[in-house]
Image 1 (cartoon, rainbow, N blue to C red):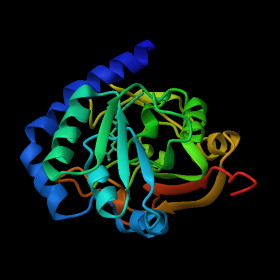
Image 2: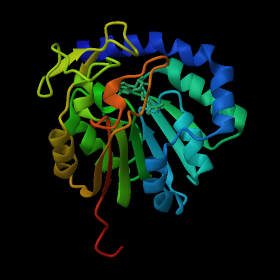
Image 3: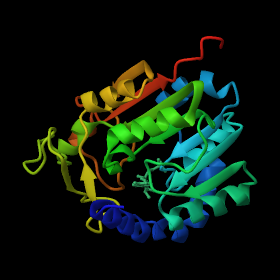
Length: 254
Ligand SMILES: C[S@@+](CC[C@H](N)C(=O)[O-])C[C@H]1O[C@@H](n2cnc3c(N)ncnc32)[C@H](O)[C@@H]1O
């Protein structure tokens, strides 16, 4: 593990204490509703109809795992390098009696067998933590069985540049769309460093890993709105999220 990844992992382990402290609230949230947003549900519905075995890369607090099972997934395996996070997610899934299991591991390089996933689900603050995005895409392609799908719902890479001013959006002077990395100033904080990937780079690593692109859309709403903030950048004029659906090509006989 290189220094940047080690530092980020430590930041996440510290921040993940929140998921332990908020266990009861998150359990209530998981019981009461879905964490999947309407655009996700629309894209995922036909895939979940087939009751796929899902691998959730960077599964975080695991609310999406609960929602994926509720929406039809047969099983979900969450992979995340935070033992605190996966412990909290495991405790919640166990309390709900759900078919979710968790693996503590650094990504890319999931310690799961080739072709084990019918659907790889990820995003909502995941790709910015990947130091080597091409290796991430190759790992996804390896995990997918032929004809399996990759679904990403993620912060738009341009959203890192928008200020959170209430009157009008401004472009942050300390960020570049084409930059390499910058210090995270929201969550997990604690000195974590985000990697900046452009939309073009993201699409190209997916294609280079041998996947077929089926869908790419940009969305005005951010996937996460920190409490108490109403940013003009989220009023519908700017891209704040994107969704991507790709597929590992079927075997000739499929
Ligand atoms: C913002 S969360 C993702 C959220 C998750 N998709 C959700 O909605 O709950 C980012 C997660 O990525 C994990 N993470 C970051 N870098 C990682 C890496 N290199 N390997 C494995 N997990 C990583 C962190 O521990 C954290 O739980």
